[in-house]
Image (tube, rainbow, N blue to C red; front, side, top):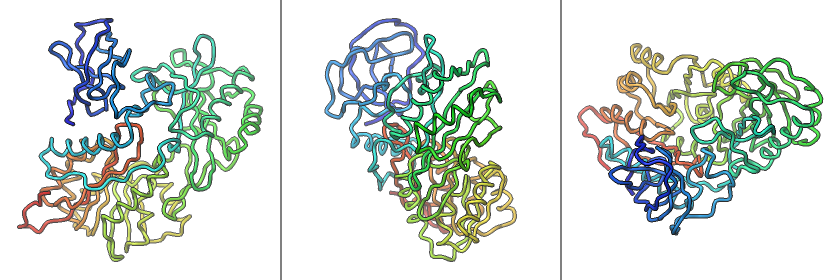
Length: 463
């Protein structure tokens, strides 16, 4: 399977037509690729070898009717799958999803002439209800309150009675909130008029403690019938352990505002990874798949080969989850993160777990490591888990100067990973590549790469 790295092209030669096509391939987003005249087009929910009638309107394509089905296709239990943009591969059996992700990573490496490929795959054991954070929007549609996720590339709400990737409790809570809003005549927020109450609801759960945090994102400080709202929600969903009111009146796509108030409970929940407890509030970054995160961190540990006397740098550390789970195997750990609230949370997590051999620094990772290189600081190992956009050239060249003996690079985007590896490979060799399936039913994939420092005269290893 090779990839054509295009989404729907911008040709408007053919409008509002239905035409029979055959899928020849998949692109990097899991879309079916087909030829139309002299152009390439892509459509969701179509597999290689399948023929279908496609509805085409300008640059938008949609499967109108399948003519023949691939053996790799499975029935999708989600009623909103053809509209919601959150999942991409639910129509593909799980073995094919894994194959698709493996080949995507390998192809990204090939594009950058990196002689390495995926050697290990951590498949998921839980395929549904695995996401520990759910965020839905509330709006009016035909005079009624509706809730759900946004249709792909729009701000239109896609309603869905039950989201497969979230838990039974999360699905129940968003439904009950809609009912209570109707009963108490509470309004939805209108983004254009910048008026109304409820904008979003975010629900986080803990796999370990079973606690549930509900964050109500409202458009102003005024919350009519707030006490009655909380009373009814608690009565109908008694498993909720804490409720927060978050105020976001800004015209922005950012979900959470700055101002918060605890309406019930302690204002956070607790979860555990590999024996380390973490406090999770509304704004805390935390891996969304609690079933796979331990496999991911075990893979990092395995690749590092810690002996107990190493000084470890955890770059882009967030709330310190990776560094804290490894602290008992290292001499000392430094974590660097540019988000102030995440650093506060990381320090609190260290104190709560009585972990003394770790220090968190609030700084830009690139600026920090440049300074460390100037100081000729000594780090034995480096963990880097940058955002989807990857790292920076200055960071990577400074890593080559610092020359830690081992690097483990964790990435949620194989393209930027491959780009960054090209710089690191000036001084390092790739020892192992693994993927962990954190995002089942989507085209996203988590990749873990272990790099070993080469001696100055040693050639780069080939796989």
